[in-house]
Length: 314
Image (tube, rainbow, N blue to C red; front, side, top):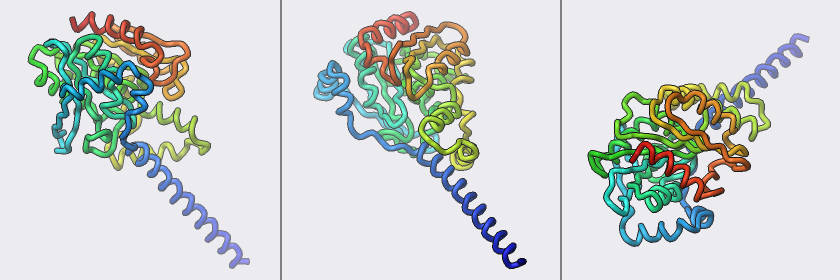
């Protein structure tokens, strides 16, 4: 009888131990895999989806208008960006921030909008963990904020001391845009911003994605993943909050979102817009999915963005 009880206790202890190992290991894997995404190495999709942009891409490359620039971050890791001057000299400049698993090239269609259609200088960084930028782990717009601030200062040095800047981001780049615009050290050259399909916080977007993509209950794996993030990378999912940052921002901001967004729920843009004080514009597109606002109607997107940005840049 005693032997039987002892066996049951040992078996139970082994099962509990294995469950704990699975929980700790699984949550650690989720955290590491999510914050160390693959890197984009093919932009054929962009030229297929935006054929009117393809000729412009070929032109700026063939005429040596597109340039690379590398600079270190505060830890000495190399960061990369693409830049090009406007067709005619101007202080008007757009800093464009791509989304998760993207790269500078993934913003070529927005670069076309600003450079070809509106006549702006353009700087397109590879955010950390993407493209040719060296740092491995991403932080969903949070620790990227210091690096984006440096890129804005780099734009000022590239294009002249009178530079007037709009920061325009899509998805994760939109989150970075809002976070940057909430910083006290935001350069005075930044006159306005455009966020396209950004989320309220890393916690909110990961929590929502887990519910959509996994059959495994969120608790306690999700909370353990957040703990892993604090241990490995020094920040928490809740801390990375565009919602809090946009509430501090005094930069005029345009909010763009599709009401059929399958990645970032449309309700998030209403919360972001409500939190923003001062000058702001909201454009919600019916029937449009995540990051597809420009794809849906390039002319209207260009008109609305150009009209909003022009109020503060010109």
